Length: 127
Image (cartoon, rainbow, N blue to C red; front, side, top):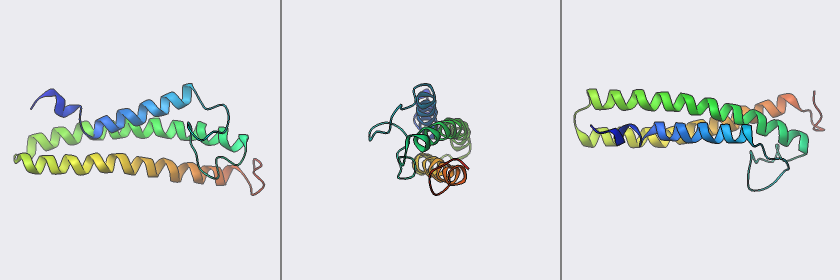
């Protein structure tokens, strides 16, 4: 096994999520826009919901990135130690790569939307 096997996999997705979260924390989008930031209907209602959604989702994104990175390293080690057929290893790592991108994205979306509903009332005022 070579070093590249520990880079390409779920751990790479974890690094990307972590970096995106840190970048959004350090350089949050100042105004509502269609290019950069946490963009959903509920987050783009006004500047207050926009700021809170971006602040909250950036922390969750960084946290999910750390968890996915750790999961990816552990999974890669286990797969290369205990699963000898190369084809089976490739399939397991391909599925885990796909899931490690989809699950954290959905998790951040659902948790942030719940937070916005809990934080703001129907008139978009802080509860």
